[in-house]
Structure formats: C-alpha cells, structure tokens
Image (cartoon, rainbow, N blue to C red; front, side, top):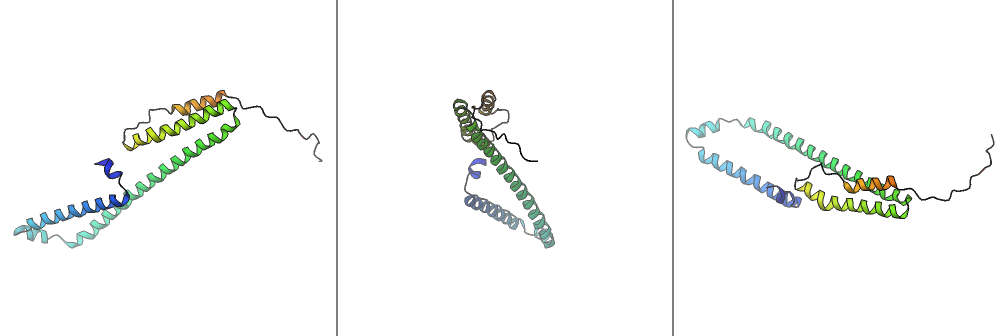
Length: 166
C-alpha cells in the first residue's frame, strides 16, 4: 500500500483516508443492522450509550499521541538536514583559505556528496532500502584533502612595535 498513498498531496491523502474510514464505518453499520434481528437485537440494545464517550476519548488520546510523535520525528529530521546543510556550507566557506587545487577538489567533493545524497540516498530512504553501513566516501576524501593541503601563505601585516603606555 505504502508508496502511492504516501506520495500523494496532503489533500488527496485526507480525501482517501476519510473516504476509506467512512466506507468501513458504513460497512460495519450495515452488517450490524442486518444481524440485529430477534434475540440479537435485544442483546445489542443492551449496550449502553455511556460506553461511547470513553471510547471516543481513548481514540482522541491515541490520535493525539501519534500526531505528537510524528511531529517530533519531523522536527528532528528538519534539524538534522539543516545541520548537515550548515556544515557543508561552512566547509565551502572555509575552503577559500586553501590554495586553488585543494580548494577546487574540496568543493567538487562537497558537490558530489550533495548530489549523491539527493539522487541516491534520499530515494533509497523513501523506499526503505537504505542502510547506515555505507560510508560517505566523498566526505572522507574531502577530509583527507583538507588534512593534506596547506593554506596559502599570506603577506603578514606590519606589526606596531610601539609599546602601550602603562
């Protein structure tokens, strides 16, 4: 059932879920009404309407707790994505301090990492076939490139040799 329903726009997802719930409720009501004849009708009338509010409250709490968990997971995912994007942006900005060749290599590796994440990892996660065993090879290479490179030598500014008054 999974992917086609989860990939629908929210409005269509809501329409399908509410329609399905309505159909199942109608089906249950129809079956109960057909079975409610003779002695069964007396037994079904013995069910107190006072049972419905507690059941409704329990259902509402269940839905509320599930929605809170989904919201929390969504927020955690947003924070994780924002942190990774911020870290990659920081690497891009700090690469300006490297000489031309390591700078180009580092930026290329970061771009390759982003491309791999968007085109391979995210679809694999959406289809639930992704594992955490794969190492981010582009980021490992970027770290090696950074550690092996030397920043370009800059001309130092003249120091003020006057001593400050005490």
